[in-house]
Image: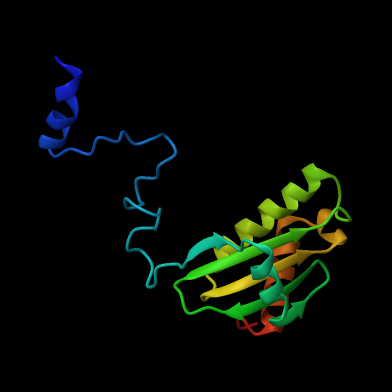
Length: 150
């Protein structure tokens, strides 16, 4: 078989040329990884808050704080949630900061928030907190800021 004809033959067959990876979930549809029609409302896309200007803009947003985190947010017209997670060196060394950042990102993913630009600032006490404590505190800060109902 000639290599020049391989691409046209696979596209003529009408099959998806991609081979699903082991990380793909059978319940999810193709595309952005959205769950199948099990929920009433599809979650908004979660993206990162990027650039100094975006962080400066969100700093002027609605505040909320708790023992482990501070939150500021602005409403967004798009159908996405932009999240910026700030974990300073006061929290700990790189491994600890990354663990706190991963935990916060997962908590935000599970919350099903409305479209907004959100900046979450971790306090040094967040390094010793469990996942459940961090989740409870983040929900409390978001409720105080008015983004979610407490």
